[in-house]
Figure (tube, rainbow, N blue to C red):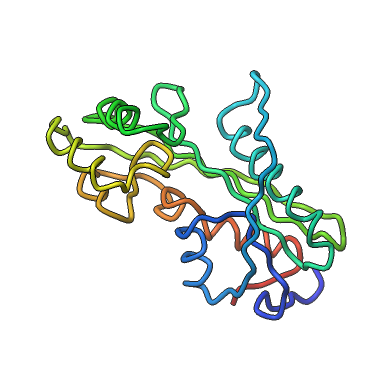
Amino acid sequence: MSQLKSIHAAKVVLASASPRRQEILRQVGMSFEVDPSDAPETIAGDWSVGEIAERLAEIKARDVARRHAGADVVIGADTLVVLDGDPLGKPVDAKDARWMLSRLSGRTHEVYTGIAVLDPKGSRSVTASVCSRVRFRQLDAGEIARYVASGEPMDKAGAYAIQGLGSIFVEEIAGDYFNIVGLPIAQVNLALRQLGWQVI
């Protein structure tokens, strides 16, 4: 591979409005523009969960890349919470959030994040997905109701935020913590390196 260039000199676009993803990129010193995708998230019925996360991340990244032909790198991501093979999206209302948290109570679930890192100038791309496992302790109806009333679950896949108040429900994790938050930064770094960029 030729000499890697510093990502800190690159024009980077994050195809996500997620404050959690933005904070993870800032933690490794990356500067970037935020431009969320509004592309329809269509999936095929025969895709695995990992493939769904990757494909949705790529759909978002390619949608945004069309608006940023001068960018060096576009990063897309999509996170899915899965219980018994059933993906849990963002809750539609408080009742839905309580239902999701009741299902997760005392159980182990998977969190998949797909990433897509694109080079709009060279038409190259790298996609990948990461899976982590999270076990919740047994939750009672009162604390579920109070957590939902806090508002935190309402824009989160699976109706919880592991980096926020939802952390008090977590008994055990296996795998990449940052993947659970919404952006597996180690995997993003590997993808960047494949496209000729280095974070450090």
